[in-house]
Amino acid sequence: MTQNDQKRAAAEAALAYIEPDSWLGVGTGSTVEFFIEALAATKSRFIKGAVSSSERTTKLLKQHRIEVESLNNVDRLPVYVDGADEVTEHGAMIKGGGGALTREKIIAAVAQKFICIADQSKLVSVLGAFALPVEVIPMARSYVARELVKLGGHPEWRAGVTTDNGNVILDVHGLSIINPVDLETQINQIAGVVTVGLFARRGADVVVLGGDAGVTTRVIGKK
Ligand code: 5RP
Image (cartoon, rainbow, N blue to C red):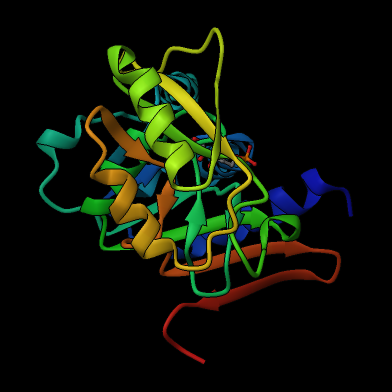
């Protein structure tokens, strides 16, 4: 199986978690694009519509004639489906490779259940080999970078990238994240940080991974 086949398999398996007649949170990235294709082909008529985590996802949902609703108009969001750059067996994730981390984190906070879909290469025992994205208010870029160096990281400005919210991204290399909840909390405290792409305080509830032997599912908190 190619990596794309694994992503597609995980994406298709996530259809089983959709709650009919409800709003559905939809993340961003190549794995989510497979999910949107599968959703459009099968279940889109059963959901009320989608809450989108990025302009890119909104465009794709609309191309597939799936209604997109503002999060502010949605009182209940049972399920959010999104990818990850890295995920542990405990459901902690690094996200934001596609730059959509802030809206992703907001939707994850609202959703009752976070379904993470990925190919097996994303499963790690310790987060941090993938550079940790941090969305920052533009005027705070240098200050935040200096603070991230104090935490042991090597921040790199993602040049030429402006997020959907008008901010910049620092990708932090060289971290070995032993305690993701603590690091998420610490980085959240730095003035000028909008969002850190660590999703540990609110991690995934279910991790659906596509691999060579098919799809494996981990329900976090259950053996
Ligand atoms: C975007 C994300 C994506 O979920 C993450 O980058 C994974 O992407 P892909 O499915 O393309 O591997 O966090 O901000």
